[in-house]
Image 1 (cartoon, rainbow, N blue to C red):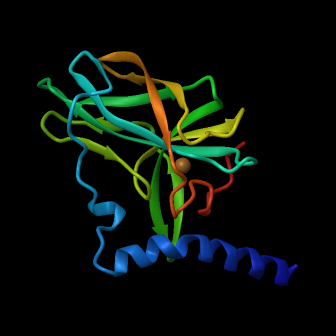
Image 2 (image 1 turned 90 degrees about the vertical axis):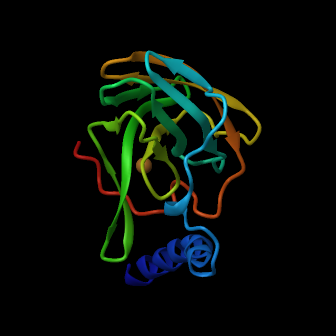
Length: 179
Ligand SMILES: [Cu+2]
């Protein structure tokens, strides 16, 4: 048992290593990624969704991460409060927290989008989590994602799938679901 656990831990660390190394060698760490700019992929009310993307997943993966920049052209704070997609059984809003040196994901109730302050969803930070994937996310494909904002309402956009990154969306530790 103990050996198996150790082997799994080593595998997890090995999977995370490229991402850790990237932060330590002068390249921008994920946390330093700038807000995406350019024409929005979709807009609803005062909210614009810029440069949405997801990572390609392994054939048996059950989860996938989706990232984007959210901007608010209005005068009041809005919040992304829900998401759904036909490619997943459910979709949650997550953040990452360091817990004793281990990156863990945690669901959040909502993601604030303040006027003039783009909210950046990115690997290692806030993200939209696809749970119970019905099919792998294939590089080069697209899938629909519906985002619901507290004030602006719902909008559906097409999310392009990019190459699997160095840090796989299911490669980090995750707390057990509450049910
Ligand atoms: Cu997550």
